[in-house]
Length: 393
Image (cartoon, rainbow, N blue to C red; front, side):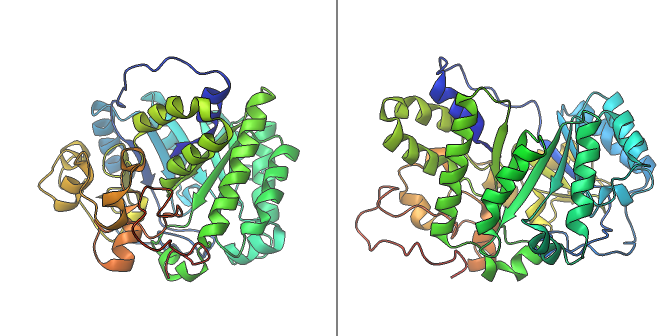
C-alpha cells in the first residue's frame, strides 16, 4: 500500500529521517468466506452467491487467530466474498478485537442495513472499506447488479452516521477512469476521509477482464489528480487519507512529480520512498483464503504456500524452501527486463509479480503495468515504450 498523503505531509513539513522500522508481523487479509451477493468483474476470488464447501470453521478460525497473535500480526482485514454473509462474522470480529488486533472490514457495503449496523458498531471496527466503481450506472454494471450503488452508499452513510471510520475503494480500468473526479467529489459530499485507489491486478475475474485495464497514460493522469488532491488537503489541514495499491511504480512516479514541482525536496522524498521499499507481497502483506490456504497476497490465489489446517501460519510464512517465497523475501529481488536496469528499483522493488506471471509465465519478469517511460527510469538506449497501450498489450 502506497500512502500518498503521508508523503505530501513530508513535503509540507519535512521531518528528520529516522531509522527504518519493520512491522512486527505481516498484515493478514483474511477471506473468511467466498460466498458473495455480487459477481463483480474484477473479483480476484471469483466469488458467487452460493456456499463453498470446506471453509474454516469458527474453532479453526480461533486457533489460527491465536497463532497470528503469537506471531505478532498487527492487522486483520476481514474479507470475502462478502464477509457479512458469514453467519459468525461478528463473533470472529469481536474475538479479534479482544486479542487487540487492528481489525478492518472489507465489504461491498450492500448488506449493511438498519438491522446489522448495530452489530457492526458494537464490534468497534477500526476501519470499514466500501467499494464504489463510479457513478450509479457504471457501478451497477461493474457489480453486475442493479441497485448495488444505492445499497453501497446507504451502507457507507450508516457507518458514517455511527462515527465508524469508513473509506471509499475504487479499482480503475479504462471503462471507469473518467469517473475518478466524481468519486473524489463524492468523498467530500459524504464526509469520507479515506480513499483507496486500486490499480487492476490480473487475478480471478480481473485477469479475465485485463483487456479493460487502464491505458498507461490514463494511469498517469489519475495519479496526477490524486497527488494534487492529496497535497491540497494537506495544505488545508484536512484529515483525509489517499492511498493506492497494486502498482508500486506509484512511488517512482511521485518522485518524478516532486522533482518537477518541489525539486528542493526531491532527495528527502526519495529517501523516504527508499525506506518504504515498494512491493511487500510475501513479506509484510499476506493472505489466508476461505479454505485456509496461505498466499503471498490476495492476488496469488492460484498459488498456495501451505494450509493452516496442516501447519501454523507462522511456520508457513517463515519457510523459504518455497521458490516463490524465497524470491519474494530476497532483498533485493532478482527481477529481469526493464526492472533490472531501472534507476529506481530500490523504491518500487520490482512492482507486482502476479501481472508478470500472468502475461509471461515468469514471476520474475518485469511488471508490464509500469507506466513510466524508459527515459524516466534511466534507460536511454532503447525506443520509448508506448504510453497509449494497455499493460496487457
